[in-house]
Image 1 (spheres, rainbow, N blue to C red):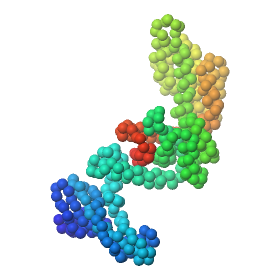
Image 2 (image 1 turned 90 degrees about the horizontal axis):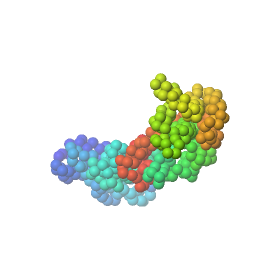
Image 3 (image 1 turned 45 degrees about the vertical axis):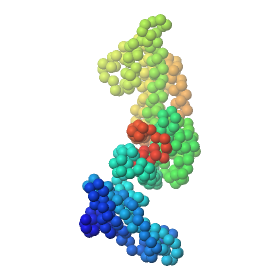
Image 4 (image 1 turned 30 degrees about the vertical axis):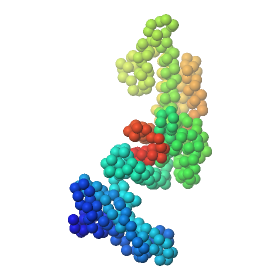
Amino acid sequence: MARDVMSVRLWLPQVRVLGVLADLPERLVVRVASTVVRPKCPHCSAPSGRTHDRRDNKVRDLEVSGRPVTLIWERRRMVCEPCGRRFCEDHPAFEGRLTARLARRVVQDAQAMTVNAAARRHRLGWGLVNALVVAWAGLVGEHRRRRRCRLLLVDETSIRRRHRYVTVLVNGDTGEVLAMVPHRSQAALTAFLAAQGHKWCRGVKVVVSDGSKAYKAAIDARLGHARHVLDRFHVIRWFAAGLTAVRRDVQRRPEGAKPRFDPDVFRARFLLMRRPDTLDAAERERLDGLFAAHPRLKAAWDALGELHNLYLAKDRKGALEALDRFADIYGTGQIPEFSGIVDTFLAWHEQILGWHRAGRPSNGPIEGTNNLLQVLRRKAHGFTNHANFEARGILTT
């Protein structure tokens, strides 16, 4: 094939074709050289036009009509006249052993498939593809962390369940993953915030996390100026535990009775978790019959409804009124199972009630991100290296 035709076919800027070495159905090999006359010295940035020698570098390029393309780059070793040092020329079209456009395509494919699949597709080694993914994810993460973050979401997810965890940090304004820090400890979160710097931390106005004491200690130490809010989902789950404890006590029957548990109470376990405003007439009638037989269960359900009203209220004043109504129900002494919930609420009341003043933030985006990360973990059959998991996680989300 003529050199001019091959130059048009390759279409690489500042690259000229010296000749076609192999044009076969199974492969295409082309010899190329840079058209930059005076490359700059990496040491002193002075342009140099003195060539010491030339070396052939093999560079993989995008396939042409299903054929793998190999470029033989006549790479010059230059001598810098001002500083006298020798250096190899660089070219923006080449990234190591790959062209820049092939490297971009590999990273794009690795976002939608495993590293193994991307390596097989482009006939490259796993190590090379993974190194590209890690390097590109590092640049993406660094770019995200430079941007201002007003709402910071913090949660953890597992690399190996019950064994290894990472702390996931998400910019709540954009939904982008900022980092995935090893471990779920105070030191892990503190180290990330310290690395971000004082100016970035001052820009954080609201932090949303679960009820982790380790995260609370790190947030108080580094983001004491920001409003710390507990995620609504975790708080409601705490509240629902009280009703579950009452229901389990109510459904027990005397020793020797069969069935061992009251079937009507047991079958209503999911219905009892519903908010009053979501029930239809038939469901409400079913619960009324259940409550007539078990008054303590009604007290627990009403108490949970008032705790729900902490979040259904339009403002902090309405939330405090709902809290007063809950206190009245708890004061009757019918639901001692809620004592642990009361203690937890007293310990976290500022973070729970601050939800209204903080603009009603939610950890929903980070929970969705964690679901994607778990799908990624299963698709890759598990990760043993944190850096690889973080790189794939940043690109996937």
